[in-house]
Length: 212
Image (cartoon, rainbow, N blue to C red):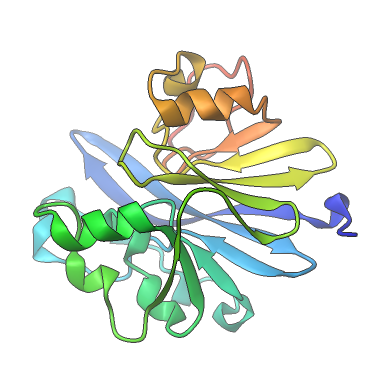
C-alpha cells in the first residue's frame, strides 16, 4: 500500500508571460510518489514568433535544481503552448493526455504551437476518461478551458490535492464554478487546488489569489 504521507506536490515556476499589462507566472508541478516522479505540464523553453508579443521570460527546468532524468512520466493537463513547450525534454517517456485534447491540438488552427506538441521523440499515452497512472494519482477529464482538459487528483494524508492546469485560471473561478471542470473540482471537496498561473494553492475561502 502506498503511504499517502510519502506523496507530495511541489510547484515550480518556469516562465512569466505578459497578459495584458500584468506579468503572469507559469507553474508546473512535480508529484513525488513512491512509485515514480510525475511532472504535470512542462512550461516553455524557447521563444516562438506566435507568442513573442507576450514577452516570455523563461526559468526553464533545464536551469533548475531538478534532475530531469528523475521524471518517470509527464501529464499534460492540456496542450496550449505554455503547458507543452517543454515536452521535448522528456522524449521517450510516457506523456499522458486526453485523446480529445491531442486530436484538437493536431487539427485545430490557432490552438497551440503544433511543432511543440509533436516534437521529435515525444511519446503520448492517449487517455479516454479517468485513468490512474500510479496508486492514488488519478487523471479526470475536466472540460471547460478546452474540450480535452484534464485534472490530476493526488491523495495525501491531508486529503485530495488537485493540480488543475487552466481548468481554473484564478481563484474566483473555483469560488463560483461555471464550467464542468470547475464544478468537478468543487465536487471533490479538495484539501487544496494548484493552478498553473497562481503561486499559492486555492483552498475553500481563499481570498483573491496571488499571481506573483
